[in-house]
Length: 174
Image (tube, rainbow, N blue to C red):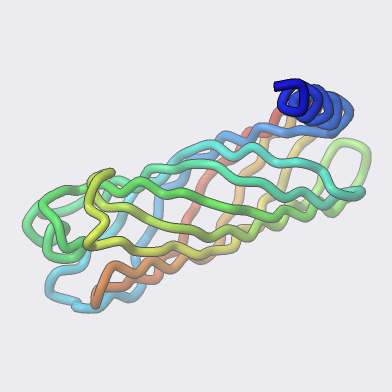
């Protein structure tokens, strides 16, 4: 029991000294290409949160969760995902690089990827998501707001799509 308490104390101390950031993101994703085309969604909305840790000046790594809500005909979306649902839970890992422009603005490049679970429980149609975004961010102290776009790919069994996410990111530094 003492070892667990010592390990917990060391972990809490390390986190307290670290630069931990919380990112909340959301985007509207335009589907460019999809297979099969007869059952593909035309767009989807994604949002979620990431907790990142600054490992060096301007570089952060972390993880989080997201939700992708596929728009369009429910039958087509269910055929695309492989289950009777219109949403998928994303379990993400991410890396960010912050490139300062001046004292109040920067360009943030964020790469992410992970598992995507249609309907939260369908592990038989387990998929994955991978993407990269470039955001122009405006910094106000420990708070940053960013807007930008990127490219994202999703695969569920034999179905896949490539989309352009256009959205916003809010980052809070602790």
